Image 1 (cartoon, rainbow, N blue to C red):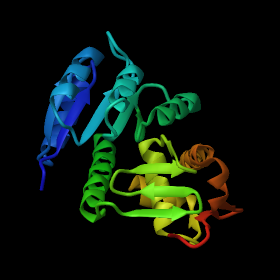
Image 2: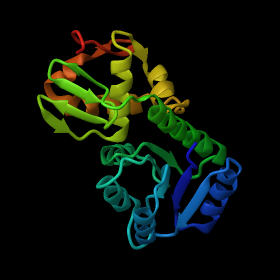
Image 3: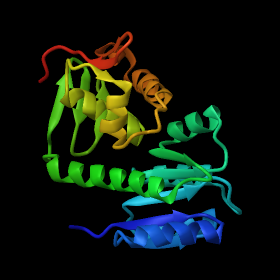
Image 4: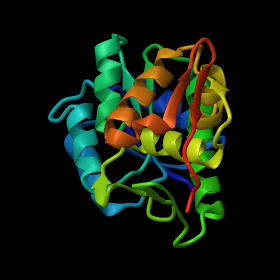
Length: 231
C-alpha cells in the first residue's frame, strides 16, 4: 500500500504541532508549510494524499492556494478556518474543498475526517476499473478518469460533486436521507449539518444542466438518482 503523505499548511506553530502529534500516531508522513507560497512550492515537489490548509495565512491565503492546487490536481483538501459563516463554506465548496472544519476543533475529529477521506481515496483506486464508464442519455461518467460529460461537453465538477454523483449512479432508484448521504459520501457523521448535502446537490444539479432531472428530491426524506437504462 502506498505511503500516505500529507501537506499541512498553517502559520500557527501550535496548530501544526497538535496535528503532527495526532497524525504521526497513524504513521502518516507530513510536510509542513507556514505560509501559502511555501505550500505551493512543496506541492509542486511532492505527491500528496491530502492537504490540510488554513484560510488566513501570510503571503498567500488558503483560498488562493486551493485555486492553484485545483489547476493541476484533485487531491483532497480540508480547510481550517476561524470563520464559520455559511458564505465561507459555500465559497470553499465551489473552489473544490472536500471538507471544512472551524477552529477551535477537536484533533480527534480532524483525524477522523482525514482517515475517512484517505480511506475513500484508497477504496476508489482499488475498485475502479480502467475505462469503466456509464451513460444515461447524454450524461456520461468515466470512473477511471473521473471525467463527466454532458451532451459531449466535459463538465468540471468539484471532487465532492463527483463523489456524490458517483454514489448516486452506483445506487440508482434508492432513496437516501441526508444523514445517509453524509455518512456514505463524506464518510463520517458531519455533526448533523444537513445543509451541506443540500448545497452540494444544488451545485451538482447546476453542473448537470438538463440532466439535473436525474437527481430527484423525495420530500421529507432525501434524494435519489432516477434515470433510464444505463449503457
